Image 1 (cartoon, rainbow, N blue to C red):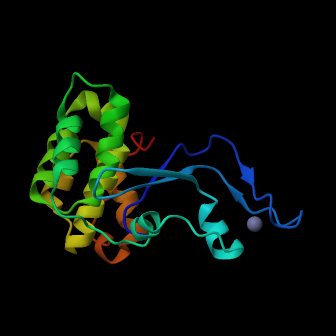
Image 2 (spheres, helix red, strand yellow):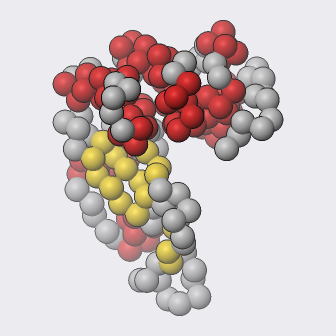
Length: 185
Ligand SMILES: [Zn+2]
């Protein structure tokens, strides 16, 4: 998967109700997929299991987003999301969502907005991980981590980058110094 947002983790586990009892296939979050037009599909994490094992067929746009028909080209949606991300008069929740969804676009304007967000202490308080993950997604696609930016980022943001790079692009992670302890929440 390229950049679907995983959200609402650990709201409790939900077991598949189609599998025979005892199979205990569980999910504990949601997966969000944004389309180029800004439509956001939300599904329980178990949708991956429903598709693979139970023949469920979600809308084509959802599958495209899930399977990595990304990145999208700069458009009105990314422009809007950048504005939301950097507008400190808006609710932090919206801005966090924008930080996640912007990973669907590979564009210098998106990159710049995420960098600005990574230096915004107030925003970092609520969304360091999401900002770090989105930066890591952009670096992963580019095949190169910007170590200077990584080193100068706030430690909370570094943790988001560090985890994401290790989980999806371990080849890029070998030279990535471990962020300081105590900021990995
Ligand atoms: Zn099942």
